[in-house]
Image 1 (cartoon, rainbow, N blue to C red):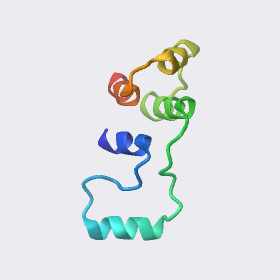
Image 2 (cartoon, rainbow, N blue to C red; image 1 turned 180 degrees about the vertical axis):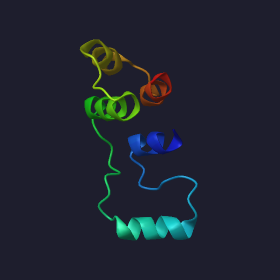
Image 3 (cartoon, rainbow, N blue to C red; image 1 turned 90 degrees about the vertical axis):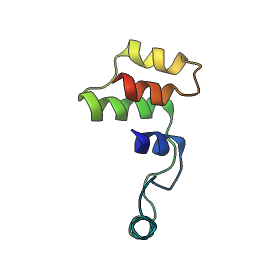
Length: 79
């Protein structure tokens, strides 16, 4: 879950990896998709990865309308 939160926040450093491993990962994958994604894409990816289906229209609307700054972490826990 921490990895998803970090990737969602857009940080390029994966937490809790030894520095040597982090350096090798960064060198091997310099263009890895660590950039933040739009909320719609985040929820779609999360849903497909965790429950194997796309979010319903209602779930998407609920997620997009949430004012919570932690809505991504909350949905990770929810699914």
